[in-house]
Length: 249
Image (cartoon, rainbow, N blue to C red):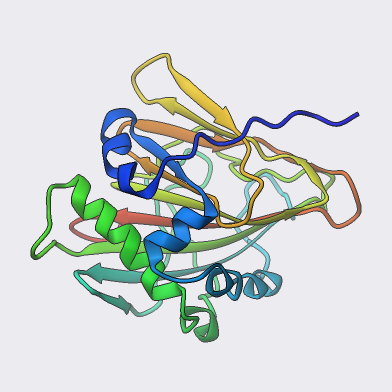
């Protein structure tokens, strides 16, 4: 028997900033993401093969084998994107009680991934939204961006996209893009007010659907996945935007 999946509440690109101001989150369609980046759907899809070459996450404290990832860092300022020397991913315990408080050195993104035509305009487009939300336009301050490629698979019978549970990331804004999903059930996205009773739940199913979050005002999580066929997985790209500097110990 099929399970009904609630679709994400899609916002037109032109209204994204206003909707984010009102409710602290907004979802864009794949066509909206291509519009935001000023690239084609084919350019976005050209990024997908790199998710087939992600090393295992060696830091999972629950003993799982279900997560693979790469991680690299960039600075967005105005119309430029610059990759910085490889660095550890670090979060304080107050934001990640399971994996916070330690430096995690993940394998960097592959140079050929970063060189894809969609990569730079995608990050620059998201940077423009972040700057608009901060009321910056002419000469915006830099955004310190951490990029995470994730594959959650069903090697263990169940895969946990957010093993730390509902959380904030300790940044200004978070962008979660679905890159693909195959042979799974679950993986529902849930967004809750950080200081209130209201929330929203939906399932992203179309590649390059985007959820953009104001990290100070909401917490988020994705529910576990289970296989509906052998080799089921869920691929995402998570981009965090932080002003002032990268998080570090």
